[in-house]
Amino acid sequence: MNEVLIIGTVALDTIETPFGKVYKTLGGSATYASFAASFFSKPALISVVGNDFPKGHIKLMKRRVDLDGLKIVGKTFQWEGFYEYDMNEAKTRKTELNSLENFKVEVPKKYKSIKHVFLANIDPEQQLETLRQMNKPEFIVLDTMNFWINNKKNALMDVIKKVDVLLLNDGEARQLFNTLNLVNAASRALKLGPMAVIIKKGEHGALLFTKNRHFNAPGYPLEKIVDPTGCGDSFGGAFIGYIAKTKDLSEKNFRKAIVYGSVIASYNAEGFGLNRLMGIKLKDIEGRYKEFHDIREF
Image (cartoon, rainbow, N blue to C red):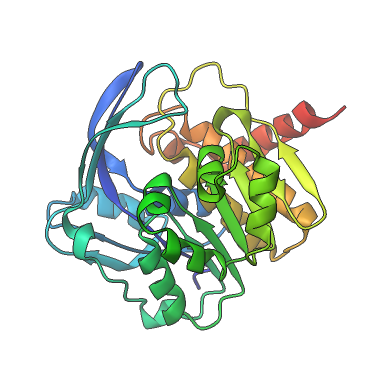
C-alpha cells in the first residue's frame, strides 16, 4: 500500500552549470520528491506528461513510484535553465508548460485514503483540488516557489491554512510575508495554521520553526556541486517519506527528518538530474546522516 501521495510536475529539463550540460533529462518537482521519498516509504505520484515522454523514463520511475496517477496527453512540460557560480540561484532560459497548462487533478480512488500528502511545487489551485479529493489525510506538507507567490498569492495562502508543514526557501519566505527577517516570516506563517515551518537555505542548511522551538540544520560541506536542480524537492520528499515511515509527528522527529532531507539533497547536488540518487543505497544515506550528527555535535 502506498504511504505518501505526491502531486507536482514531471518534466524534461535542459540544464547548464559550470560543470556541464544535459539535454531533456528527467526532472520536475514530483519526480525528485517521489524518488527521495522512496528511500523511506512507498510513494504514489499525480502529474501529467506528454506523448513525447520517453518510455525509458516511465520504466525507471515505475521501479520506485506508483504511477497510476500519471496522465499522458499532448506534450511534456519542459524547462531550460542555467547556473553560474552562485549555485543557489537558477536562471530560466525557457519554459514550455505544454500539457501542464490545462492539467486538472484527478485523484485515483486507490490514492484517496493515503495519509501523508506532499504538495510539491505546482499551481496552488491544483494543490487545493488535490486536498478536496482526499479522505482526510493525517499529515500534509506544502512546497511552493516565487512564481506562485507573485501570481496566485491568495490561493497559496488558502493552501497554507490547510497544511501541517510549510516548506519554502529563504527568499520565498521574505517575499511571501514582505519582511527581511526569517524569524518574523516563520512566526507569521505559523499563525496561519501549520504546526511547523521549514525554511531552506540551500548549501547553508535549513531552519525549523515550531510554536515554541527552533532548530538549525547544517548544510553538508560538498567539495563540488554539479547541479542543484531538484534539491529542494528531494529535501521535501525525503522529509515526508521519513515521517511516513516513522509515523512520529514530534518536533524531535521533524529534526531527524530534516537531516535526512538534507542528506538526500546533498547527494542530489553531486550529479545532473537523478543520476546521483539512482546510484545511492540506504547505507550511504545512513553514513552521511552520521556525518551530519558529527558536524552538529559540540
